[in-house]
Image (cartoon, rainbow, N blue to C red):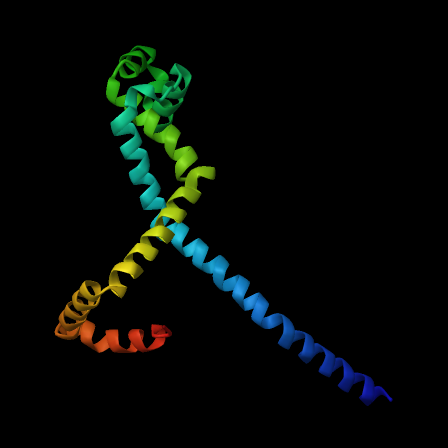
Length: 168
């Protein structure tokens, strides 16, 4: 009787695992991909967007004197002891510009706006895929692969990486 229950439990467990594992692995793969793209690609796209926004609309981004003061004291703690120097630094346009950049980065890089870089990365990959699917793109990619295969270190690694990633 005890052996039968153990065998049934093992069978049910393995059946449940067989049903759940593909879903769990798929979700894990998507979460890993999202995290990878956010950490390695999106953050740079968003920082570029912030710089572009500040370049194009610097004076239209509102920051308060308190935000400038907080930025200055965070980046130059030695100014806490000297209100006169702090006041001089607060008048510098470059400090206001850097405060605007930090203010935008809090939203675009570390906050809810960070999804913009992720979406731009996805769109960029789709555009690259469309280009590489064309005749010109295929020719260009063959030239790049030829270059890789003629580069001593890369030619030892690339074929194996390509073999693992060739699923299309």
